[in-house]
Length: 92
Image (cartoon, rainbow, N blue to C red):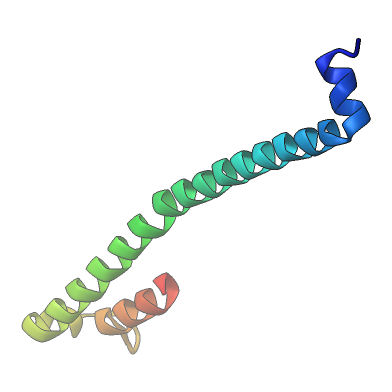
């Protein structure tokens, strides 16, 4: 009398069952990898976006409502407005 494993080996279904289990494990591992990548993205991209957006809004407010401050010369012909513009390029 054949055992269940021997019967499955003779029938050829044991190999298919092993492939199915391996595929399920691969999908599970791949889902975990995607979750990890998404978590790292959320931890880096969203704070960076918020910081860039806040800097952009503050730059607009300073340029619109504080013209004396942005006209202050830092060195030669370079004033605060130029530094704010360069900061926008750098952050972006």
